[in-house]
Image (tube, rainbow, N blue to C red; front, top):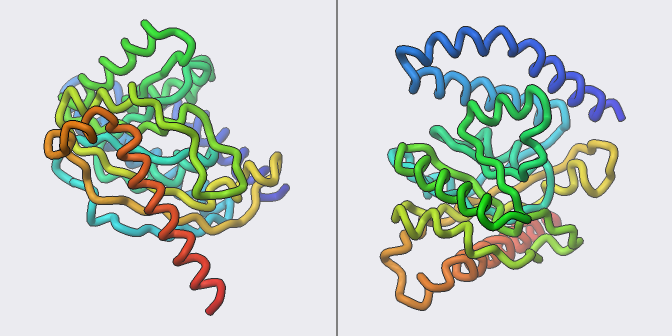
Length: 252
């Protein structure tokens, strides 16, 4: 309960105290839009690191050398819980917008920050609106802003950390149309922080692994045609390797 209260209070204070900062950032963005974007990115990354500290979350990161630093990419990860975003966003080397469900767009203050951070809101029930979101993501990539999507569409609630819901192929149009690299991410343990003892927050260990970048144009025709399932197979192998490593550490 103490961890939950600490995290909730910090997030609330951050959102409220950041209101006057928006004015300053708006002025900076008038002449130096990239500088404003980067400063906002770093502020939120700092806030997420504080959230991880307050929640007692311990993170093991593997394969970070696989993330291209000088180009916009499409991050694709399995979705286990709320802390997936917190864990992955604080590791992004450059500007990155996340695709979130459209209901979050109506949350005061939070939605304002997300829009400033190039996040996109997806209506899962409206195909036309969904296509518009994908097209917007394509433009973001072309403008040098990376995009992160959890293409299962919702979090997988299975107790088996290697299990995933089917990836939605539409998400991968972003990489197909731009040719950008797909960076697969495998997450294990993030549901242990919050979802598995809801409504409490518990200290837990989370493993985040980055796979080698996938460039769609270098794949054969069948892999290009089923880019989502191809990427999911890679993430599945990464999750299995994580489980082996975790099991070995537990037995030592």
